[in-house]
Image (cartoon, rainbow, N blue to C red; front, side, top):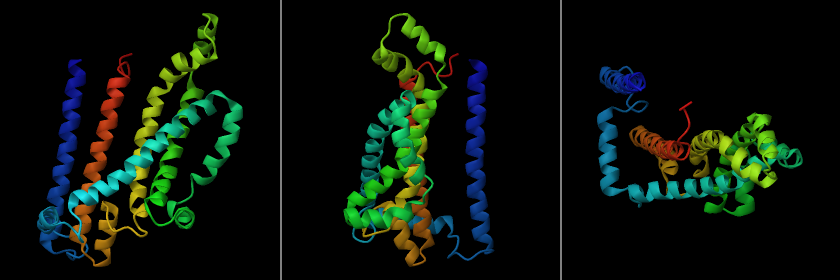
Length: 261
């Protein structure tokens, strides 16, 4: 236990040191004048943009409204992906016929860049939030589905046979053997899905959006406001880390036995 805590402190120290080094390097590069401030803004200008946007907002919306718009789209799509991908993934791993029905569709669209089919979604669903949420949903569905299928396939057959020997029926095997065993893989898929959806967020806010952090970054790029772009990117990164930490906390509480073997 002591050794584990010691390693945890060392890892946190290393991570903190990396962040400090990056910030120092940022200060050094921008202060030396090696690159134009249009390409890499100074930390001071990014901070000033942050203060201005927090106080005055950006293009008619407050920072909370921009952040809320993005989080609303992201969370709605994420929840839809969870409630559809988890059961379908578990069923596909448990039943080869269901897998044969769903997997070809997932494997076909999964490698496609989101922008490749976003225009079709806009044509079918309009330019409102519906098409944006659908784009994020499609991006987030595949990682969860694949993680669930993989988790079921990795379960040792002895566990299932042992449960059946003790009198468990198919439903009991599914809920009391397969589902608990796949929980670590499900949470891995959830974390991966969230990251994929977040990277797709900018694409989702490219068409007919007037709010959102992704839109803020895109709009700032049109005016070469790299300071605002850096602020938006940093904000997205921090928000993404916080959301990931929430999932990791849930994983720790729900799968309390993980890592205690």
